[in-house]
Image (tube, rainbow, N blue to C red; front, side):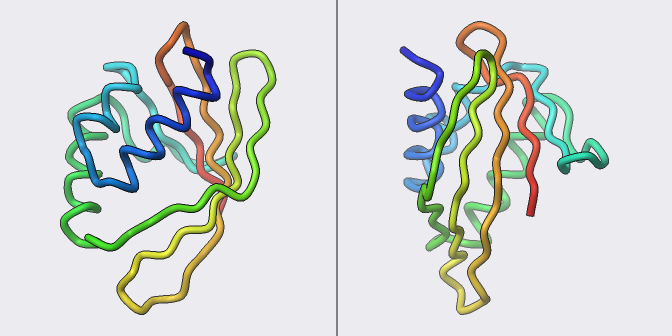
Length: 110
């Protein structure tokens, strides 16, 4: 599976609120950071707990892919996110870094 296909599969699982399907594309030691900022999450247990909470809090949450680019071990998505709760939608860049077929780091620019 290509890295672009892996990113699409995790996005599809995210939109379906399929926690297991989403998490299986990330390494056990996944790191989440704010672009050029702090690390906000480290490890699968922390990552999984965060998205379990997000899925429960925003059951209508959806991210629509606006653009995707890929260079070597990095895939960058530009997404439009609507929480589905009446709050203002927003755009985000998700920068996925790979080792092999797993995402080892994701940085968000909001």
